[in-house]
Length: 214
Image (cartoon, rainbow, N blue to C red):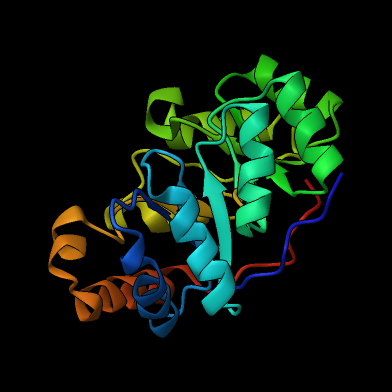
């Protein structure tokens, strides 16, 4: 499958932006805190504009498109400049669209059967989502036995208090989380506050190891 773009952070901020004009300044705030990847979800009408702004104006930031659930969205996020796509699930049409577009793709899974189905499609890195509801740390530890070669980006229920425990799991490549860009800070354009949250997360997580192919 298609190799991921290189980034150092082991924490991927998961962001729903309602104002695309915030995107570039937000990207710089995260970079100032040591985070060089951001997932802008397709949950708002401004998402594609935000992805395009970061891709154009902040090339040192790896901008990913999140909540990609339809094949048609793959073309849209590619056109906007996304360097990576993530989904809460996996379908054949999504896989084909991502492969045809040459876009690195991390599909979501929740059960061992879904992990095995994704492995048959050639994926070695998967999004465990929603991580807390799927069993969290206990599920990751259980999956490591029969499926030791699969690595995960758990997302959903990750926060500073459990971040270290997740990243300590040998099958966790990095995690996704929304706590780094709280809606109140975005509304206030509190870039210094977001940088502080990013810096604290970076201190807890350390740099990423080599990214596996997806």
